[in-house]
Length: 361
Image 1: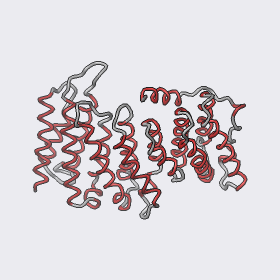
Image 2: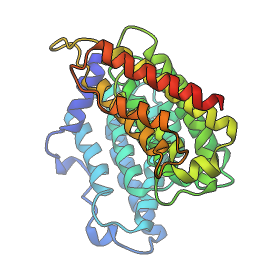
Image 3: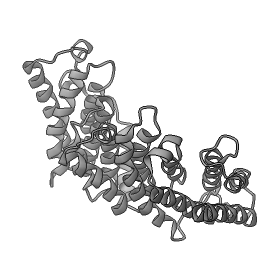
Image 4: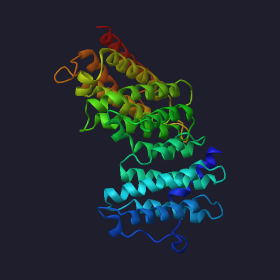
């Protein structure tokens, strides 16, 4: 059951204190800060990680499983050298992959392994955990997929910046997209999408963006948002609507818009933004139901769309200098919780008209 998965996820993040006598000794900071890791040290790291992997694969002691996850997480924390983190990430990938793929390991043990991998990936900032991340993204459990998405997300930036990514790197990116499509159900669908969207769009918006990153990321953002738009089609409010804004806004940076998007891409980006504004307005106009539904995130998302339209189209210093888009953005920006369906629909309708008019030019 997904509810049980969420409970275990919460328990895993708040694990009890470590039973040190049942685990390998903690890795000293002096070891973690070593600039060059010898073969002997690599073997010691691997032996220690393997010991924890064996604990994670054994369902007889859930407390010890949490302690093993914490041991791995602690090993990746602090001021560690790139060489140590590289060796640790390689070992975690090799030793935890059998745990994730096991048919006999408990769900909790597999989830603890996934959470440990996500922590190591975030610290290492490399691509050593791609096989493990891809395996988790292929899992049937949304909780394991979420841990896999966090593990994958930490490895996306160097892949996007590589003009010739490896087949394994390309496969992981494709599986990130597939995982979003295969896990649309709450309560983790929004978090799964947000991790993927942020990991792929942030490098485009960041200060280190370049033509290689933009070329790799733009089609992935289009794919992600096309999948995500389907979440708005029904009557159930999608989770985390702001994550859609953040991903779409990657298209509207000055350099990306002028140098990274073809005219066809520009039209597609504006039309997709218009669709999200209309879809978001549907839920922003619903009255609040205490304990069941809060329209505030959807209203805030509409305000964010409005702010971006104004930055994009401001007649004084915008990228495209369009008064109609700027005015539509101002109307969206002025919305607030309690504006009412009429005002929300009027503002979103004005945005659609302005975008349609601009696209038709």
